[in-house]
Amino acid sequence: MQTNMKNVIAARTQAVPIPTPEGEFTARYSAQGLCSLEFPSGGKPRKNKAATARPAAHIRRWHAATCEALSLALAGQPPKRLPPIDLSQGTEFQQRVWRTLRKISRGRTWSYAQVARAVGNPKAVRAVGGACGANPIPVFVPCHRVLAANRRLGGFSGCLNWKRALLKVEGIRLPDYDA
DNA sequence: TAAGTGCGTCGTT
DNA sequence: AACGACGCACTTA
Image 1 (spheres, rainbow, N blue to C red):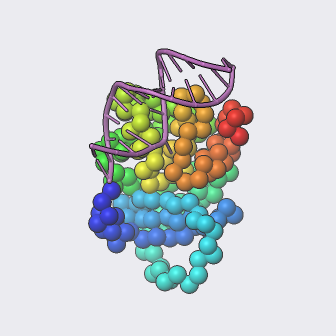
Image 2 (cartoon, rainbow, N blue to C red):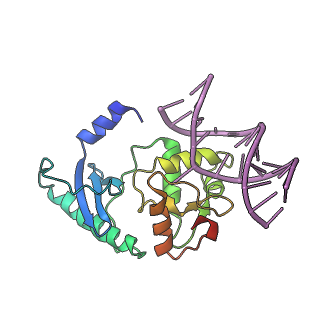
Image 3 (tube, rainbow, N blue to C red):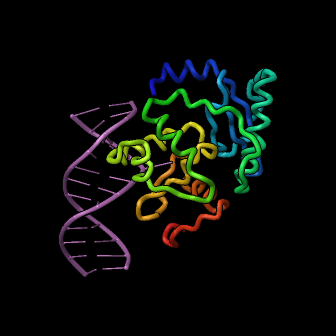
């Protein structure tokens, strides 16, 4: 994605921290809803980082849903409610992939090839991997449920341990050699 | 079986 | 034109 586009998005979105036992996630909201979720970075305590303005009421509502859903997800539980999900920043192909990922139910896994078939480009297997890597809302758009064909772990844009952890709390067993 | 190599394929940069 | 969060066929031990 072009950097200037990123800047535009950054300028029009609001970042809100989410403290969890696992560290501080960051949620970003556009006018349409939750547009990105970031894993805790390095574990910085976050100093007096330019105290962002108190979010508007509708964003506070969305954020409450996000926090609750994230907390549940980290425990392997389904969300009671979710904020609106804004995937509009992706390309056509990426959005097709991301929408497909949302259909993978909790506790199940698909292969990259399966996802490729589902989006109608059976041969675009590697491209699906690329789209997963570009997923702006991990956890809620469950790219961690996509494994390589041999049922090995495959990759993850964040640290692979997050993928392992999320699969684990969902009760998904991986071959020993991935442990 | 297990591990390694090579190559097709396709969206993105 | 180059690069992957892949998959598959095909060696080697």
